[in-house]
Length: 454
Image (tube, rainbow, N blue to C red; front, side, top):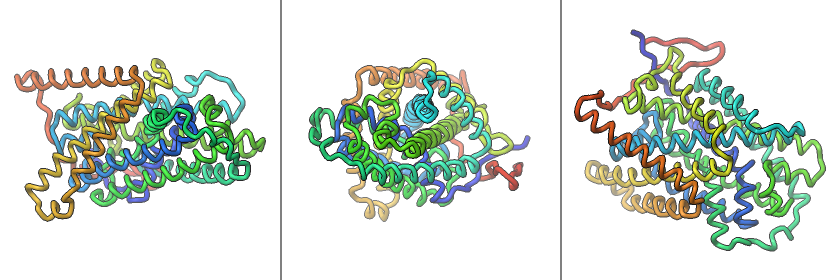
């Protein structure tokens, strides 16, 4: 029987674009308003704090990426560095977080469509077709997805620059007088919310089998995407609050459109609304891309039904993409927008804490096996330790309801893994296996599209 696998076709530019497509979206176009409601103008500090937290865990990902370049992100990194149980739990929590984020972002896209066309339709009428559309686009292959993201990211950056330059001419310094109305607590609550905007920095690790020279390009892509996005976020936040007070920004479902409306320039209003649509589109596209690859890796290892680990004849994990789409659609129906954001943050932070711990475990293994690398990274363990500490501080500032939801999911996932382990040990079901994927072809879209058989 023919087998179909993955090919390394993504260079550093594509890797950075995939991450930026995952980052520059709901955070800057939607969550910035909610976070401003907590932190006030001090949201600038909230963004800086979130970026630092992301960099700590990003460096942990980068260290692991130098040794592991398989498809699967958090799942694969934790499994290979720490233990299969850590991989299963971390991968599931990361996937859960991103699936509810996909539904949140699809709804926020609807806000900007309403703003663009002056409509008042229920956002759910946008969320469902948006998720289905980008699932289909993922089925067309990663190269086509990367090309689409290239266009979306360029458009998003240009629009944000237009927003920044235009807003500077109508900037009101008095909007910053009450800089931190919520004090330190407000700043930290804003940081905990705005972290939602940075969670996409690990997206490139989910397609590790498809990145050229992954040991170098994945770490570079992670750090570059965090630095670029945090600089853009800070500039946009300053200009947005310079245009309208933070309280007004917080009450808007499409905050950047609300900010630019004060200029009474119809062309700018249209441009920003288009930016909101393209930015959220990029997050949905990369969200389905990332979650389907984690499900693929887990299916490949028989941690979940093996059919999810199969690649179709054009090189896409067909069943995993469909599952990702189905669960995301479910969340569109049943989860409120604010709950989505906080529950998504708690879940992904739990997954990232597992990665930080895994980085420490891997560092100790390298210490034993490769003293030369140890001398180069002698004090590296401090970084993941700081990552763990800052993550749990951040979780403490998120809503109790969101924490309860995420901890319930964590408990369920842990019980499922425990039962699975017992059944495997008694040979009731087949044991999970460690798969080293071979390199082959991914579907190429366009005139060069072809099929590959093993």
